[in-house]
Image (cartoon, rainbow, N blue to C red; front, side, top):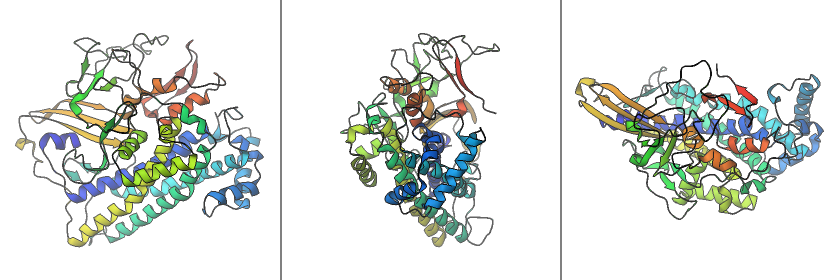
Length: 498
């Protein structure tokens, strides 16, 4: 969408920008909370230990860190009884497959019970707050109302079938519910759990280079650098300088990927000239055992100025922090102070977890601002949602090319397109998990996942919860299909995407 707008020189209306920001913003908030509780918290929280907790002490703990109303001893006793019923039945249900009792778990039983309760609460909360995206985008996570040139959802104060005053009130209520949960449950839980794991500020540092395309545009120009979370690059963990982003410096290698380039696999290609050539047609994957000195990944290896880059909430918050984002700086300093660690702790697994919370906090606070902007435009009679000046392909140039920058919740997402005779000639995208999960390149440089795992202590190789902590902190894309094997080819886990 942005790539086509860039290629054709299309400027979107103000309302389209605001609606897109609201769709992305509420997705950030919901996605990050889901990640913390349902995809990552159980790497740190021992659910079975919660059965040993004293509900009265759990109540006292919860009330000491927040005024969230669901904090009575009776409430936590009810949660504990639910967990016990799972265990007594011999089936842990949603809590199955955990490494319960693992020596790497450090939380006391009361903290585990508190976290388990909020895990369950977050399941209900997230399905309510995402209704804002359902209103504006129709479907989560892939909104259906985006159009080249704007959005398709109409604005009409006099119509029940369009965004109107009732829609504004509905979204205001959702944003308030989101803010309360983030401030009174998510952030207190994050800080409480992290305080027991400050040693993880020393693990998972990764490649030390960070890329952010910037997110939530503040004007309507194509790929504008003027965004709420700034665009930039940090090299070598140096927060003293933020480098500009030049998309022409992005190249991809396939040296260790199951693809090939016509000119040879030691070469790199810019996405505009990218190829995705995979010729294997057999019934099984193209390996019997992974040979990491050869080709071993479905991912290409994107590089910026021939350097691996980490993308995601940590990258965005580091760039914002180093760029002088006032609110981000306040929140980062507040979290670091609470945990008793310095800025160097950001470059770690713990820093990645904290950054996601900080980003959620900053994003949920700005949602009401965008809702008010939309309301003010409606009051002024500005109902424009789409720029249709170049809708007719016959008006396009014979050849055009463009790129589109976007920051998905899990990181930098770029699209590159070439158009010829009104048709797509070539299209390539470089997605967040490709940046973070990339294999080695032609120079042997490791990607962020591989680099971040070096030096990680593992108490039990058969139960590698420590490995999961760092990998999950990146929020890897499960939909890309996952297999985990040991060095002898034994499969540990298989995830099938239906």
